Image (cartoon, rainbow, N blue to C red; front, side, top):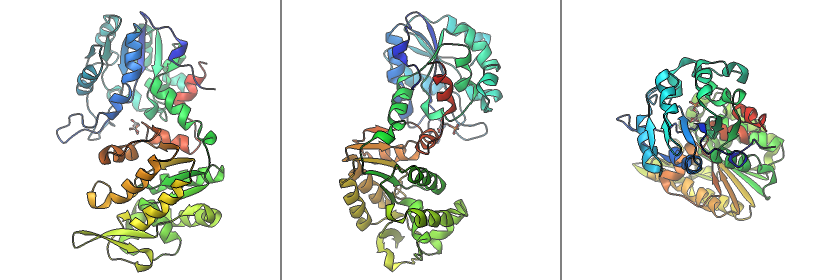
Length: 398
Ligand code: 3PG
């Protein structure tokens, strides 16, 4: 059973804490870059504000010590532009100032509190009962009447702002969370044939998804591309060349061996690239697998592979995609991602994992999917059948 949602609560005049995930790429000057995650939460925030709630928004940005660890002033300005209701900002999260600012809100007003990860306790993964005893949660809960978790993209973390409040307050899934759980939680019911198109540079992720969905008999076909596709080619005995193999082994020493075991167990389900693209003399050159090894690394799948995968997708009832098919950031090597994702968008039911994959689609301007997840790690956890701690604690509120 799903967690309670905004349909189950009356928020008029109530002060609602809303955890969102607006963790976003920053540009070279440290300003907010891609604002897709902010746009995703506009529905939930607008609905609460339209319904007369006073909204205190909690969010993180980056990781301590990382380049993208930053305050949320820019995010607040952008949310203020996006919403028809005022959104203010305070550079405090749970201090007396922050609590005072929350108490000063009028119905229909929101405030974005400072980056939760500026406080070390937020960076610990804790059981919910311990998370409920952190300063952040204990100090904020008394000024809130309810908690809404809309941060699907962070739901695989059991950090205080994600799992602590439901122990103190009536708690609900926001609209982003609700939709993600509805779609990613019901893949087993989507029409067959069900095709998984797995690519990207995170080979371990592709292998984990493939293993999980094949073991659970969820996949009728697995189309491999990207570095993961190269690993499968090598595992299949193709001499792809050191320039392609070395980066795979640098990332994951057992990737080729693991891919080999999967191929052996589920040979009939796998589709491997029949051609690849390399850079030669500054140009994209396509080589059929029989022309390998090449001195250059394989940076994309070739057009014969795209055509063969498009044929498989033509007959598919559902496609689930995770990971780009090549180094799409370089336009010469974006054709595989464009071709495979373009064909997938035509399928009856098309579901796309978040993170790098969603970023690739935005950059290439490919649209038309039934669902593009907001979550990278969280979507992956659901695709591999895992539980999300922040959702489990919400479910207990049902
Ligand atoms: C994400 O971008 O995947 C989420 O915001 C979680 O971020 P994290 O991996 O730093 O916890």
